[in-house]
Length: 124
Image 1 (tube, rainbow, N blue to C red):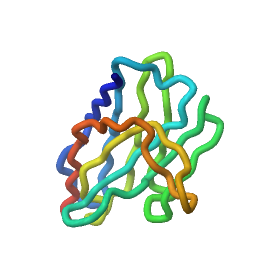
Image 2 (image 1 turned 45 degrees about the vertical axis):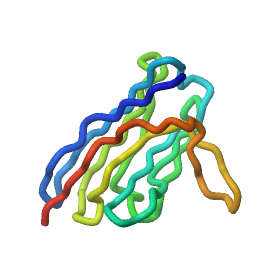
Image 3 (image 1 turned 180 degrees about the vertical axis):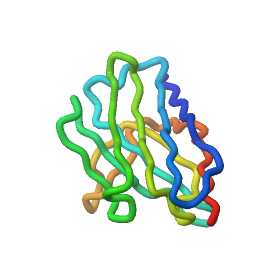
């Protein structure tokens, strides 16, 4: 069974940057499109970014376009999310998962077992 471990979150001031990492054990990411999602307090988990396999194309939520960059290193079985120009509204727990396009064209996680996520807090 795959285990996803997110890391790299923290407290940062608005305008700052963070780089999140997602590592997997028990299964390789190779062959899977991968994505990042986030969940803010009191809100549902939402899509943030997607990268195809082997990484030729990316896709972002409008709210992060131009500020976040997703990348992958299949040799390390790791996916990254570089977050620049952070805003207080980016505050959330961030999760990664393999992704697929679900009903209605939305991205959804493939692996049923999500990781614990990593907390990102942006102060104003």
